[in-house]
Image (cartoon, rainbow, N blue to C red; front, side):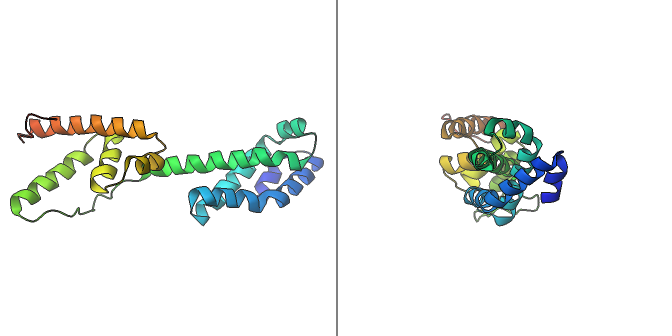
Length: 183
């Protein structure tokens, strides 16, 4: 990874300055990423991406900070935080139930069929609503937890759940399920 970063830099003085920066902040950036991601492999990826971004824009950093690697540190910490948050967001969007997932169902044949159909309907919904409904009603997560996982505010999560429920109720009614007169 260090070789890739150094290959981006043209001048030897930039490479020397970057090496000093890397030696000084390697552990710090990794620990910041680890505190956000809670996964050593992902934290390493985030730190590497942050160093690569600094290397790509090193001339700009060098002009701003007058050739002192100590002054680049706070910017690098901000970069690694942003990279870590981006990784969390991507993982949140990618998290889905596997197709072979067999949801726990209530006992009784009519209830089993209804529950299985309900899970099918949730899976067939647009991604925006499917994710929050699965997390809320199948995984029984709280709105704040869902928001953290998907990178959304609690209000946005609440609104998606509300809209998703309405869409789900419409689908159930179309299939002949009587949800009742209340929504």
